[in-house]
Amino acid sequence: MNNNVVYMAGVVRSVRPNDWVVFNAPTPNPQLVQVTQVQDIFGDATPSTGSPVVNPSTTNPILVLHTQLTLSANLDSDLSSTVNSVTMLYDWVEVGTLIDQPPAPWDGVSTPLEAVQPAQFAPGGPTPILMEDANGVGEQASGAVDSNNDLDLSWPSSTDVPLSPELQPPITVYYNLLPVTCGKTVANEILGTGDATVAGQSFMLAKSPVTYLTTGSSYASTITITVNGLPWTEVASFYGQPANAQIFVTREDSNQNTWVDFGDGVNGSRLATGAQVVANYRIGGGSSSPPAGKLTVIAQSYAGLRSIVNPVAVSGGSDPDPASLIKQYAPRSVLTFGRAVSVFDYQAIAAQAPGVTMATATWSLGDSNQQAGVTVWVAGQPNVAASVQTLLAASGDPNRPVTVLPATEIDVTLTMVFVVAAGTDTDTLTSALTTALCDPTTGLFSPANCGIGQGLFNSDIEAACLNVSGVLGIQSSQFSVNGAVQSGSLYLPGEGAYFSLATSNFFPSTVSVTND
Image (cartoon, rainbow, N blue to C red):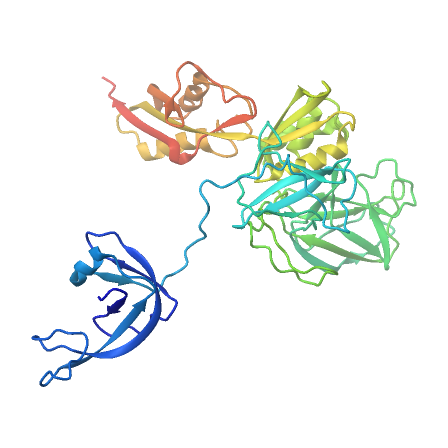
């Protein structure tokens, strides 16, 4: 080393001018500098000289080709004095984006968004909004146009909305969103031919499950039917339909096969003999959907579309409800008749929304105008609160404000010691205990048994475990939240929160007793 000139031990062809390199040694601090010039030169490896530059007066020099680097700054004296132990790091690999610490959050309240002129925001609201920060992190929100034609944002991330999102400026706001659906189109499937002598003909679709989409406060299948080339209309039921109504009804059997039913000539028209019945529909969907940043390609062009972005995960889909949830919510949903009046109606409609596993509703009182409203908490897929908000806005009282918030999941750690008989198969017993507590459908901590805001008695846990064959008793039980052991016999998650027990957080052990 010589001030800002460094002689490498050999030839280094990977370093180029303008590259950044780091010189490091065991004792001094590392130094980051930029290379301004790179050239290969000959040095003399003769022991008596040890010079990086060939001296013409040297007899029989041993020429060694090596690389000479010229730096943008002189190296620190500590590095220059420890030249034999200095290493150089180069050829950097990009591993991430540096974020200013702490990030400067944008509050979204004191600075309403203004439309880029001459464009204007459509009046009214709320309108779905997506936000994406400089690092591609997204947030779902809603916006309403104020009296100055500016867009005010809010997002359901807490009960104290609106709040500042943890996003790194600059933030891109996507206002005019395009809805998407998941599934595959089945086109022109011939179901069969009509027979006027048969009342209520039925045809099963060849593929399933059929995709259903929201329509206002309800849902409809994606099935369209033509009979001899003419479209027939899907209805919810045959009740009260005229005898000549060209309608059909869809239903699913226990194997998720979809059937198309036609009228009997009394309620709904029969199919004419020989009429060809053709179906078009979509299949697939469910809870599986693209994560954030993965939806970038469309199958066909769309006028005015430059690119596709999804800064938040696509949500709103749902798999068929398990029997436990149907048993819990179906009776109440039938009584709503598609509209929300009581808080139980709001809860039932929210629970039936795609992607929702739990829902609860309570009356609330607005701070500004003291107007009675409803607060609904939901759990399930990420960002599902926004779709539930839209659903309830279509089915609830327009004069009663509704706020939909994501429920808070509280992770529980449960440590228990069980008394068992000598010779008990502990592996089988542990599996049964885990199912009794953690099974997502039937377990004590499942949505069907431990809802949002629902307290849990210690005796509930003990009863669920004592019902497992082979458990004689419970020696000890420890219920912990975030590492803190909870005391007392009743555990309360708080408003808008619910307990969740993962199998990895359940720690059962056993002690054996012998019958004399």
